[in-house]
Length: 165
Image (cartoon, one colour):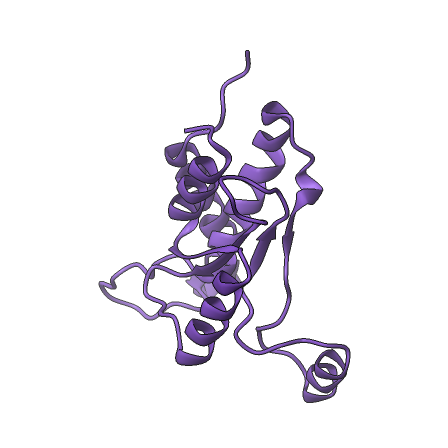
């Protein structure tokens, strides 16, 4: 049997993903090379962004779900938030986008729940009041809702929810 990808392996993928988005060096000819996008001097590395965590989570799902007998399409992103042009935001709102709805859905019934919803946060993120209210509404309808700080936390929640832990 093929083994599932561990949270540590996902963290390694997250590090590679962060490296892919790190500043590049450019050759400035006789003046040498200069880094672009990062201040000089010692700096504290930034924690992974919510996007980087989301990419790591999706990679884990795409790799592991088939080995668990699940179609990866049962896990999906719900694109409600993010930065976009006001006209696009207005169209999405007109089409039914709702404030506070979780970022991800897993449409698999387990343990008396109709499905799982995940609000994925960067390690330094936090749940706001609108999200908390929406999450309670969904829980009242029989969905399991979890706020996860980072991809490894979301992977742990999904694994336990599916009974694969």
